[in-house]
Image 1 (tube, rainbow, N blue to C red):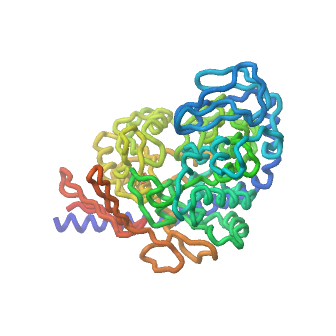
Image 2 (tube, helix red, strand yellow; image 1 turned 45 degrees about the vertical axis):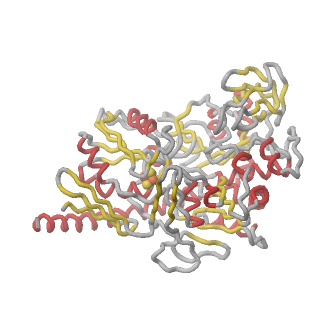
Image 3 (cartoon, rainbow, N blue to C red; image 1 turned 90 degrees about the horizontal axis):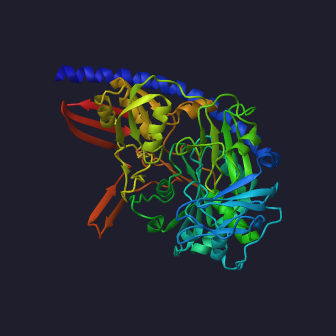
Length: 575
Ligand code: SF4
């Protein structure tokens, strides 16, 4: 046993040194690529108006708008127009039944078809800038802020699609409005562009939401790396003392709802809890802008900001941001407006690299579409055996199976991250502590035992790092669900953690930050332990992620001990 321990120590030391080398190399690549992408985003933000005009031009050639009756959470809305009806921007075309949202025409034109799932409109004229063009205003009294949001049909534009009026219909008794400006999905850039183009409008939107919910404080959660956008928002916040900026680290998934609450308020809610249990609402930054427009101009939610990237002619690994794309515009029109597909491609993704889903060229953009990414063709792994490791905050099991089949891999095992929970038993998973790894070695061992040579994962940054601590050592080739996308746009693939899980360095005035609880640096908010009891179920949970993590499991070969002492230092011992 002593000899075994000695040899294990040696292996650990060797692994440590090669990891150090790899991390150093990756840091260098990451730095230069991040610079390239950032440069592209800034360039695009400046040219946004031109880009919107291009969208209009492209739409003329397609000419048809498809408005899905289900644009978010809830039942599909019920049409209130019929074939042949003339509509204009803002005409109410479908109403919700129960939980849901109003749907308005995003163009002037004639209804050409009404089906069980969508309303088709032959577009007569497409506005170049919808916010300034003529549109049918909502009729709600401007003083009734919540009624304006409801009539305008605003839903969560970050991807969730929860009806905003239902979300805001609560009294926070002086609590917090948490604005999710994490733009956590890599590649997407339209939220950051908004903060530079419309900082004052965004802040007015937050103030309206604070008034609706009776909140005392607003907090804008944004990644520390977005210095230009932070500057823009801090400038607009001058003289406003009840809204502050909170800096987030650049790891995935900082934009998950409970991660935003944990980072900004230091409260870790159980997966069954709503943000109101922390006396807060979490709202996406574009949704805030739509709330502002509904109240200020009586403007219905008829458009979406959008990032287009990937294998697009002339885009050079950058992105194109389009403001106010009419909802219902076809994916192919947005791609054409951005430059058109450049040669052969693998798939078109609607959304971001982690959570996005493949779509078709004729699919319409909805109120929750944030990105369109065209990828390189998939590599052929010639039937290699693969095990899947599913994360609650990344690609789900179906999506991982879809990617495995596109890679021509044969799935031999499916494992879930230990923290991925399905509280309602409906296949919708949530993470118990987003972005803080519970250990993945046992899952990797199961996949190895199933006979796999490959492992395809959808894990967060921290858990991917942990997979890298065990899978290669077990002889498994690691693939992440985002690999083909990152490779397309020239970003380093997701593997070892090359960034801190906490904010380091000075914090600008007007900001707070997610600090390492052990650092004792001033000015930050430290995440804390939260005890939650569910009296109905007789259960309780108690999580303290400020302490080092240890995981023990009896295996057929003895006891497996995984201990994580800091964000990127992992040791595995067999005893
Ligand atoms: S801890 Fe697990 S479930 Fe949670 S974000 Fe990371 S991989 Fe996903």
